[in-house]
Image (tube, rainbow, N blue to C red; front, side, top):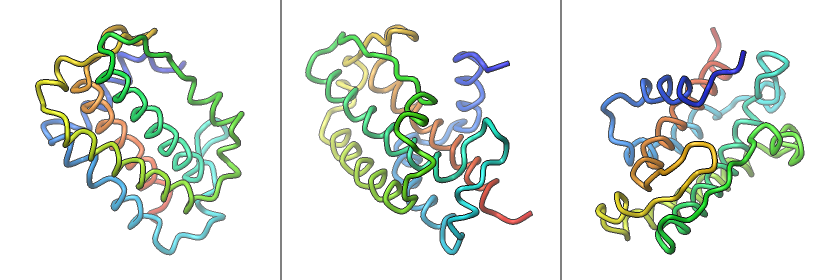
Length: 169
C-alpha cells in the first residue's frame, strides 16, 4: 500500500531532523555527483524493484522537481495565495521517459536549476518566505519556508536511495 502524504512527510522530515534546509539544498548536487563518480550507466539504470526508480529515473525526477519548485517559488512571491497544481511524479516519469534520460544531463540540469533557485531564495527576505504562500490542490496552504524544508527533506530521501543503489554492499 502506498504511503500517504502525511506518512511520507513524517518519514522525510525525520531524515532532515534539525539540519539547516538551505545547507542541505546547497550540498545535495555535489553529494550526488560524488556518489555517481565512476558508476557505470548500466548500474545507474538498474531498478532495485520493478516499481521502484533507478538512479537514472531519480536524477530525471530531481531535475523536473527543481523546475517545478522554482516555478512555485516564483508564483508564490509574485502572487501570494496562488493555486498550486499537483503533479503526478510517476506519470511524469512514464510520459517523459525518465528511464531513457542521460543521467549526466539530468544531473547538470538539476545543478543549474538548484543554483538558480538558491539565488532566488537568497535575494528574497526570510519574512517573504513566511508570508508568500500557495494553495496546493492536495495539501492546502504552504509557504515558501515550508516548501524549502520539504524540498531539503525530499533531497535527503533521494540521496539515501541513490546511496543504496550506487555503493557496493
